[in-house]
Length: 399
Image (cartoon, rainbow, N blue to C red):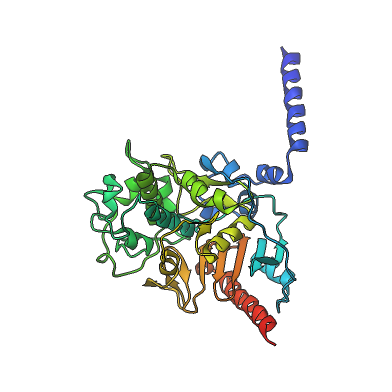
C-alpha cells in the first residue's frame, strides 16, 4: 500500500513538472500569482500583472463567451515612426504599460509592449467595454430591434417594472443621468460597484437586474450625471433582450467579423449568464485600436453602415457635464470640447480618438491604483501624453 501511494505521488510530481515545463510564460505567471477572490479592485500588483492578460483563464472569476473574428483582417500598415517629445521608455515604465499602439491616418506610427506582453495576446479592457456596449445600442436601432433611445427601460427589461427605473429612458442610461443613487468608489469594499457582481440573484432574474431594482432614487431622471457601472450592465441585458442574441454574438456579427479584427476576443459573464457589459472584454491591443478606427471611419464595416446616421456625432459629443474638470460624457464615451473622445477603463486601459487629426491611440496598462482618485497621477500623465502626440502630428503638418 505504501509503495502504491509513493508511486501515485511520483506520477503526480512528474505530471506537474511536465505541465510546468510545457506551459507558456503567461500561464506560469498566473499559477504563481493566482488571485484567490473575484474582487479585482483589491488584488495585488503582481496578481493583476498576471491576471489582466488571462482573465478568461481564471476559474474563480467567471465563465466567458468568445467574440469570434472573421477571415479577413483589417490592415494596419507600418508608417514612419512618430517623433514624440518624450522619453517613451520612462513614460511606459511610469504607466506600467503592457501595450501602446498609435495609428495616424491609418498607419501605425508607434507600437511598443511592456510587462512581458506582446501582440499575440489579449488584455482586459475594464470600462473600455462600456463604449463598445453603447455602440451596440446604435447597431440595434439601425437593425430595428430598438425603436428609440427615448424608450423606457422596462419596455425591454420587464423585470425592472415597479422599480426606480420605471421612468428612466435608454438615453438616460447611456448618459448615466438616470438619477438613481449609486456608489462607484473603487477603494470602498462596501460600494455598489464592489458589491453588485457578487449579489445573489433571485431565481430566474439576471443578477444585475436583481441588484439594480433594489436601488433608490437620488434625483429626477435626466438632471444629474453619476458614473454607474451597473447601468452599463443593464444596457447589455437590454441589447440581449431586444435582439434575442447575447452581446458577444451581436458584437461579432456587427463589428468584430465584418470590420476585420485579427483575433478572437472574449467577454466575461455574470453569474446568471449575461455578459458583464460594463467591463471585461479581453482583446489584443491592435484590435482595440481597430475599434477606434471603426469609430473614426464612421461606423462602416465591410462597406456597410452599422450605425444610424448621426449616431457617432451624438454618441461622442458632450451630453452631460461630469464631476471631472474638462471632461464631458456622451453615450458611454468621455468627451473633450475640442472634438476628441475616449473609452476609458480603470488601471490604465484606453482608446483615444482624435477625428480632426485622424488619430487613434490604444493603450493597456496596470497602474498601481485603479484611477487617480485612489492616489497617483498616471491618468493626468496619460492625458498630457495625448497632447504630446497631437503636438508631434501638428509639427509634421507645418511647412
